[in-house]
Image 1 (cartoon, helix red, strand yellow):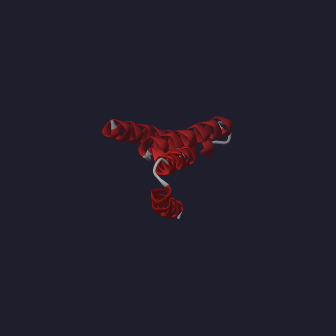
Image 2 (spheres, one colour):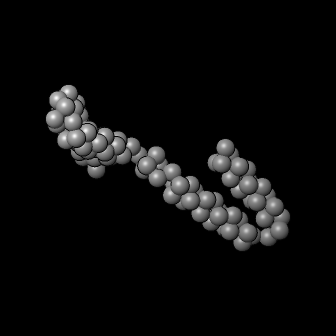
Image 3 (cartoon, rainbow, N blue to C red):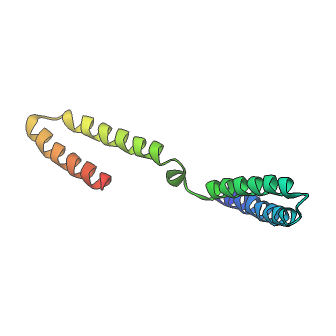
Length: 104
């Protein structure tokens, strides 16, 4: 799936580059300036779409990935509570250290 996304991102980026070139050429002529600006804005959007296709999920959706990591830490903490008090203290400290290092 990853090579397919990279290929699609590369193709979209190539189309965006060509549209950017056409938009720049249209902006040179005063009569076609409004059309050229629209084409340049479309090229800019296509470049951002191609970048999103090439980036990993954690870079595209950092807030969602942080939420997943927090839920995972919560599950680990709940599992550590199931034991006795001595085990709870020991596992709690370990889980807390892991959570602190994950946040940093």
